[in-house]
Image 1 (spheres, rainbow, N blue to C red):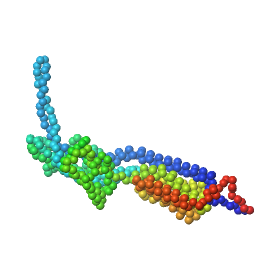
Image 2 (image 1 turned 30 degrees about the horizontal axis):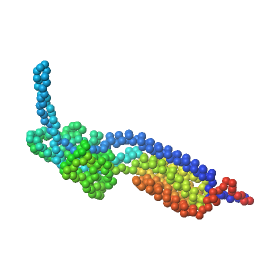
Image 3 (image 1 turned 90 degrees about the horizontal axis):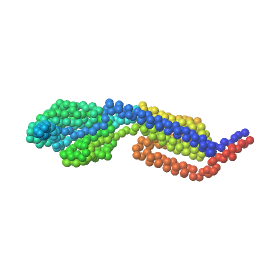
Image 4 (image 1 turned 45 degrees about the horizontal axis):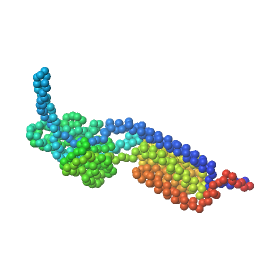
Length: 425
């Protein structure tokens, strides 16, 4: 006695079982994605402080100032007990020299550092500035030149100050460095300052608080990265030129009046933790496409895939994201993607080889997994094009399936529970 098995047919019970497997796997992916974002968020504040303490914080450099003090006696009178009493008070006034020109050179070298699941856009900066101050006083003055540090939590190496070609030893004062030198009447002052430092995320040159006027201003910046970005409240360069390793940027103005600043935002690398979390959250979409295609192919080729087969396929898909989530702590995101892809595809192909043969496992299932798991996941690497890439995959899949199944009589493919398999004696 033999039994004819109804292969390639779809039953409501089978669809319900596959839907249950899909729902359980979706819950697992949501849990994994939430865990990744939780790990990233819980470590972020602690890591931010550690990176700032060892490397530095965002920097904002201001122009130096040149000022002197003079005093004058002010008299006031009061009447006490019918007597007029004169009070003399010494008032100290601060006067600032006018900044006539600025010639600034900035060299930014991006050097990202990874801590845990996050990359930080750390950089090294070499700053040098030549400033000319006008002196319209008719007396000899002791003038204080002061340069405020761009960040308090930072290191400064090769720090130097020169006044009219004379190298001076600066003193620490008011969050920066200062020197005091005597100037003759109407003697201009040329100030040169330079230092090497390190920072994080962004670098800015702050012309002044509020609206500022800058005369004969020129800032030249070299950046050793190609993905340059200027914040919304900063000035675009007046000229720029590509170099083999990045950009040469120039800001040049004869008489600038503006409330904007000059700055550079460092490019960010792909963040392994958030990226792996986003891929995990989107994983149910890729599994849906894969299950859908497997059901269509098995129906067309009369291959009987049991719900338990779909359960193991879902496990192989989940293994990809589980491996990715815990590999990104130790290797690059690209290496983690390759390892997780090889393992997951290997699990599916080696398993379906036993279930339905090597041809179905390697060509149909293997190719489908490469598209709907590997390429689908890599779409999240393409910033700004992720949604478009997934949409293209969806539309192409729909077109292929519609063309392949256009002549199928679905009423015959859906097996009725009232028509069990026929036994031949």
